[in-house]
Image 1 (cartoon, rainbow, N blue to C red):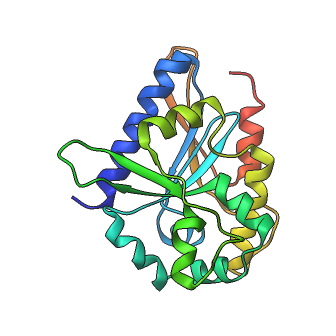
Image 2 (cartoon, rainbow, N blue to C red):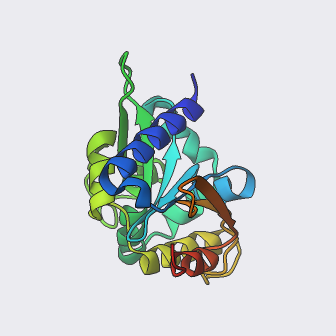
Length: 206
């Protein structure tokens, strides 16, 4: 089926839980990245008003070793410090499907899973903590998974510097979509080009 089906399933499950938890007043942002955004950041971004995450998807865990082929990920791991590992651990995850008939996605901190492939040890890495997607989404929507906006800006800036760009996370090109409802109650998607633009959108009245 491919990793795209994992992304679609996780995104559908997340949207459903957002609707259950926050109802029609929910405003959230999602980005399915490709091209340079995929290489710099990850496959998938999700954000609420309180928490943000990046997720790299694989179809199965056996494909995690493919991350060794990415120069930017090697640089991220080789330059990892205690501080950047902590920041990454709360911001950046890797996900893969369990080999079962029903869709179950497992998620874990990206650096703790991938950086051992580049001979990085503990510390700065930590013991791998894995969650099933249902628990992960619950934790994300309650604010115990993911990271606050300001820390997420720092991490996006850090990932951008590994690609030779600027460290100002609010100005880094980061195109995604903010979902909300208009006055008629219809779902609308507002495109933003950076996290600085996202903050301005979130500060507007619904």
